[in-house]
Length: 276
Image (cartoon, rainbow, N blue to C red):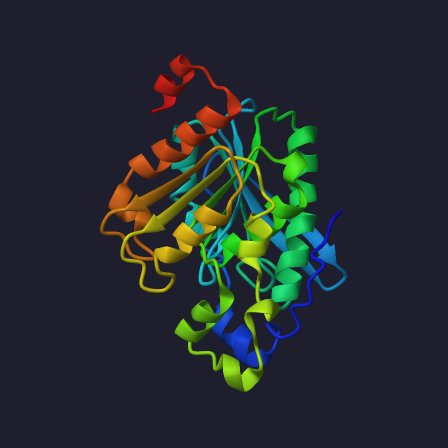
């Protein structure tokens, strides 16, 4: 298992963690949606993470998804069925302290845990005879985990999808109210998303809201420019803010993702028509 080799101690300061992470528990009274499998992945002796698989068919593409900083697995219970409708298996992972997961979130733990989740997802897909391609996807904060995995496991994935992702760390921290100068944080102490994505040559899809008020759209342009992938797409959603991309795009959002899967994985046109 590959692990992050960078030092994230500057980001693990309490002032930063309080701005980056907003964990909350899952409502225990929520019903479990149909066609899902819940797994718990032990990441170390102090924590296990909840992962929920929204299932379509075994031959369909598999998307391992890392969510934003204020979200939890169950927030995607209404979104997961749309992935299934468009012929994709959707695997959502929580961070430490989020939802039904135990432990305390830190940047170091989040990125190290992503490798454990990736390996566990691979094993589960193989054991359950899911033969479709595997893509890594991250939204907002989750873009850091997705890019980390794509850079570390390029040979083991078929594509990378980034929604509302950030390129550089300092502008994001300052937007969140972190005094980076007082804490002695430089860009080299950050997530290094630009450096990492520059080594990912697998097909890459970047989706961003036109009026994202937290992570401006130029971050998407930077990631797009730094990506060496031969197949890469940048989709700007007109009128969308940071948290309204799906609401703005509707089912077109899922259609774009499925078409991206079709393009990179060689699905025939007749199958694409079936699910779009």
